[in-house]
Image 1 (tube, rainbow, N blue to C red):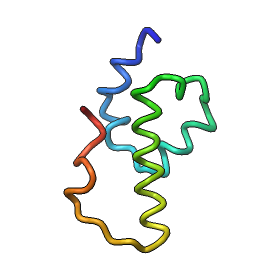
Image 2: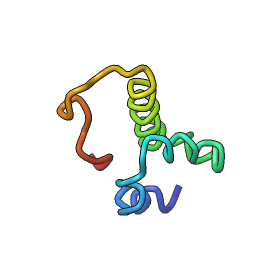
Image 3: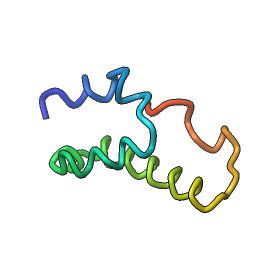
Image 4: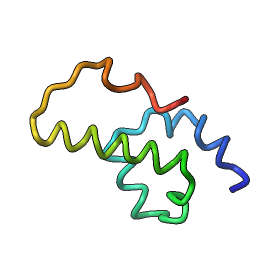
Length: 68
């Protein structure tokens, strides 16, 4: 993908909620063939699952944003 690096540093992408990231998969599944995108979506899914289960986690368990 030509614009993937630009997308990954985009302000909107960085500050998307885990819910938003997981929903993007339904909008554009082709995007999730890229490892950088699928890794961020997996992290979002993990965080969302923890919140749904009521499992507390320290903020240090999660990155402050989704930029690497």
